[in-house]
Image 1 (tube, rainbow, N blue to C red):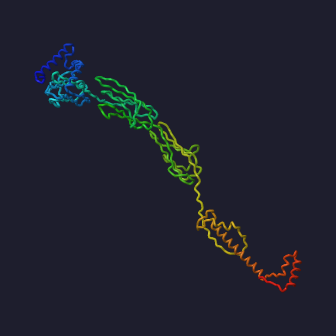
Image 2 (image 1 turned 180 degrees about the vertical axis):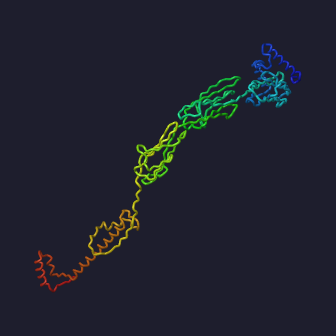
Amino acid sequence: MASQPGAALRFFILISGLRAGLLQQGRSSSLHGSSENFALPDPFYEQLQSSAERQNLETENVTVVEGEVATISCRVKNNDDSVIQLLNPNRQTIYFRDFRPLKDARFQLVNFSSNELRVSLTNVSINDEGRYFCQLYTDPPQEAYTTITVLIPPNNLVIDVQKDTYVEGEEVEMNCTAMASKPAAVIRWFKGNHEIEGSKTEVEAVDNKMFRVRSQISITVLREDDEVPFVCMVDHPAVKDLETRQYIEVQYKPVVMVSVNYPQGLTREGEALELVCRVVGKPRPEKVFWQRVDYDLPDNIIIEEDKLYISSLNKTDNGTYRCEASNIVGSSSADYTLFVYDPPTTPPLPTTTTTTTTTTTTPSTIPDASATTEPAVHDTRAGEESPLGVDHAVIGGVVAVVVFAMLCLLIILGRYFARHKGTYFTHEAKGADDAADADTAIINAEGGQNNCEEKKEYFI
């Protein structure tokens, strides 16, 4: 039976003889040579692996970061106590069942049973990368391999910049280098939280399967870039959040703005005025300079650092006032145009006049009908002006005139009726109405009076 120790020994001798034959064919005799010196032809491995798959021998590839622990597992389904063996890429036996013939203390047995051989490899290095073989001593024997891939993160990330201080508008060139990584790193650039596109990347292979990556950006700096971090970030399967930052100083000429502290609104004669000159720049200007464009500053102006003060405005202060600031980069200015308005005028408050109405005998002209009806269209509330702007004194005067006119009319009518009291007419005098002149009327009247003396009628 294949499970007996004799069969296992015969298989081990067979493998040893095959290895010796390969050595005699000109392969390297060193057990510490590369894996290619002791590797069987790929078709043979593929055949063994295919057989292992049919015989339920399983293993998995391993990816590990340099310096960490790799775990190799050889698993068997439905094993009948056949011997399991693990070999390194140089075809050296690491474990034969639970026995470790290889003198490398980094290999440690994690689990051994009839169905599994699991071994850990600590402090993995790039030299440990390669194919590891699982062998099962059955009839026929089975073999499968697992590949260990070692990842090496960049051990250094550096940003190179020509200088630390720039003037707004200058072009800045930055280089970020990721040293000795496997696989090659991917470098991304950020300005603050915004990614920068258009970088140039160079990848250079170095010894022992590692790569050096260099990325370059060129940007024109603005004042907004002052003290903003430029970030070089690496994307690599062996490391997360690996980045480095570079801060630069951006100098720029002043930005000037003039504002009014008071008054709020129109500037009028007699009022006070205070202007403030606000300046932002790098380096910050030490002081500002005030002037009035095309004219000298008035004598009543007080200047205290960035403030301009006028205690009492007048129209001679009209003009354009300029605030100017400068630093080593350049100079800038801002203007304020002053126009002094007239002082505010207060309209007189409406007054109420009380008119006393008296009756006199002085003749007066009777107003027309429109005058007597005019008060009807005005508001007569005390203390307020009417909608048409007529004062209550005028209304009172009109009423007084109307009353006086009516009294005069009554007096005239009374005198008229008193004068004609007792006047009479007779039927004899009726002919006088038809007379052509006064004499005829008298004759007619007299004749009529003699003939009709008895017919007299009195009208009172």
